Image 1: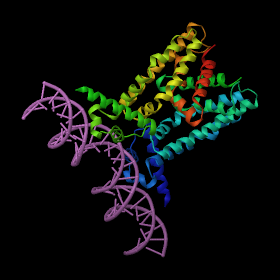
Image 2 (image 1 turned 45 degrees about the vertical axis):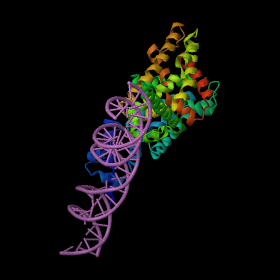
Image 3 (image 1 turned 90 degrees about the horizontal axis):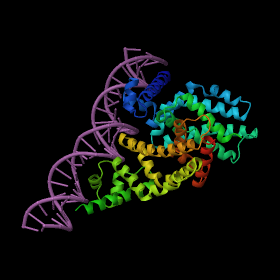
Image 4 (image 1 turned 120 degrees about the vertical axis):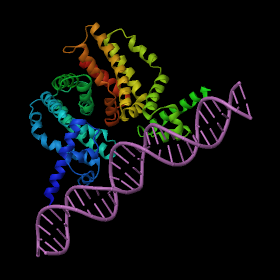
Length: 191
Length: 191
DNA sequence: TGTGTCAATTGACACTGTGTCAAGTTAACC
DNA sequence: GGTTAACTTGACACAGTGTCAATTGACACA
């Protein structure tokens, strides 16, 4: 039966996430196997490659987080400016939850990993675009921006690398990240 | 004599920069040796490790660029706001010149490479801090920022990852990067 | 009671890239 | 002619990924 199969697969994913949260990035297939309590080769019975596993791990974490529920606040916003603020809150709450796994994916430098990362970032960009369009609908996008360039800007502002820098290098709290990011986005984009 | 030595060393560095500019990041020691016209082992007679070579390559490029000359405009600025603008121009002109080499250093994930990158970023932060302090001296730093948090923000805004995203993912020209970055920094930080 | 299936195990192995080591070559310099 | 230093050649250790083949053990079905 495949229920045993699915179970092992989940155990591998859980072990992967656990290890990544502890050691960030530098986790080997052998470590994961050990943590799961199976042989290294057994991991390859469930995932074709390390990247495949990492991609599955990010999806696995996403599923637990119920992103749609988290996004309702932003989607229900009644002004563009509010939508922008709620989206930044969503994102600021989300990053810490996926950071370790996402980071590992980013560090894996093969093409499949890059493509998977690209996909995630494209999805995030859609959220930025929606916020920018809500601003435009209100006539609140400030001078000098097109929908495109404003989306580019917001999207870039919210890059994981910026969060990483502000949290780990600058020592900001996550709340500071969210609050100040809202201020920045507001000042840059809102009329 | 060591002049032959120095000469070979320079040829290695030139070959390294050339290859990194062409193929970005994925350049092996053997490739560099081949491009230089020497054996792979000879490279190790001049550089103790790949990271050592990459660090030397960034310095090598820096030396050619005469950073002090490029920075005089910013340092001579007569207002905080102008200093900020000139610094962003300096940085925006600088990144394209070192991007490929810096990127390779960033991709090398050992500790020495991380430390070298950290140093470069710390130097860039000093420039940000100077601009922020010039703003403060003019009484022009906008509400809500301390010298520290404003420096954090500007520093983060100017991260290479943001340039990379805007140029390669969003398709901005370098001039657009500079102009819009000035607008952003101004709106965020200047009263 | 056997038979087939499927997950998992074990151990060997190919491959890539870094870095090391030892012995030998080449050329310049005295 | 002999010394020195840069360089060459080829072999090798090491880490980590991914592959392969033979085997074990459990469970299901008949």
